Figure (cartoon, helix red, strand yellow):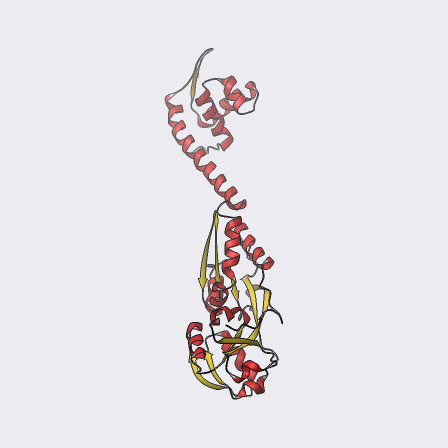
Length: 308
């Protein structure tokens, strides 16, 4: 079977003549000289092996074969234009989709402000968020279901490219009437006998605390899964806890106070994580860059004391 090669330029020229019914006007639409345009139409007819137009000195009309081609040509050119428009939309951030995974404390505290700013700049972009712990967040990145993640553990694996977003310092949270609330500096010895309410071991925060205290045991009185539960238990006077600064908003309740603590090695590092060697879409790259620009401002002054 004879191979037929027609370009979108050929189809546009054909449709211009079908619309204009004049070689002169159609050539002008295509920015060609009349002789060049006539040669192009003849080449299209030769390629297809069919006469597409009946023409005389006054009229240009589609032949039956030309009418058949017109239907398909309009559909194909329309689809191609849609393809180009979609591509340009993604490239110019008029449309697109970004999927990320993030630690729940980050997703509920710092991230909403970043999302709001991003959507203000790029209202046509759809955002998708999975708020989960580090391990499942990284699994979404690994499988390609998330463009990138904000995680605190496992980010240094060889399969990932990781960039440090911030160092999240730890704070004691206790009732305002607890003896530790009056201490200026708090260390391991101060916390050894305090009744601890812990997050479950599935949380990276818990694992970091155990490493920082080792070999000193902690006086654990309760273990919970949710920060809201943790807050309620502390408010009831059951115990104290130690959490990163970026989670303090969850424990912001009248009668509770937070105090910065300094323990060797006790810092939660938050990373931006993507698949190694994988390119981000223009929209995902813009969101990634915005997160770097708006990175949390955390340091010795980042966790201000709060009493309410």
